[in-house]
View (cartoon, rainbow, N blue to C red):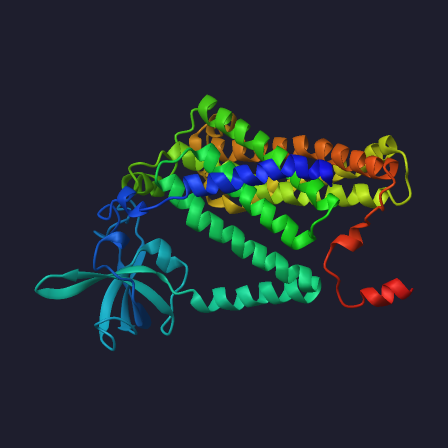
Length: 401
């Protein structure tokens, strides 16, 4: 633990000082309020209930393709919020949105644009998803807490803290034009310090996992910067990227790509390092030789790395399936299509994250094996993994057995 203190305390101080020095203030000065419909003064998104659906032809409507016939819809919506509450307004749905299915009784959100000396204008914004998000959110939290109990609850609190750091520090700092590598490293390190120790307790095992995680983050940050520059990724791959650039003139879109790769590495790094540290401590219960502990733990780690690489790749494919489907739509050679930014960015994100995992695995294993060996040589009491974690119900019965 003395060795851990010497290594981790300076990193913790650096993280805290970085948060204070780079914490964004007066972010609104870096945002243009006239670049997006949602940010214009007076524009709101009130909720309404669909009362009638009438099919119409898409000819002449925005977003329609005149080369083939398609069906759009005219919705009658009873306003449930806003100055026109109780009144009925009409909005138009494009063919793609109408094809998803819409029925009377569904709730939708409309864009209300105030017009001087005239009735407000309304446009369709999106479907209201408050109820399903709430229900699935409660099911998610309930299932985690029911199975993992106290540790699951702490993990949920840690997830909330991670969201706080990203929304209150990382996103505003990027919008303000801060260095993306520093923002990604400082924000990610702050999250890992709190999440790992809060969830797994203060112990040499957790500290070992933290060192491996931070090392992997540094590798991922360096590689992400090099990959974005070398591959000349601009960050402009979709219509939303143009909107982001116009709304935040001080934000470089390459910063979004670099910081995105760093953040994407967080979850997998945490999973691999904490599992690898636990494997070392478990093996140390029956094996005394540090070299053998390292080699046996590495065999476990290799299997874990193989499965985690699949996890990263499939998670990326699932999250960007709409983009990947364009490979079929374009009908061009795969090696040619994959070089386009929208595909190359996802491929590089997967590969850089995987390299960070591979680099963190042996370091975490070596640090853990060395700590176990040093502890024995100095004659200090060995701390088993169970002694450093929150105790759950039933642990007393296991102790008796």
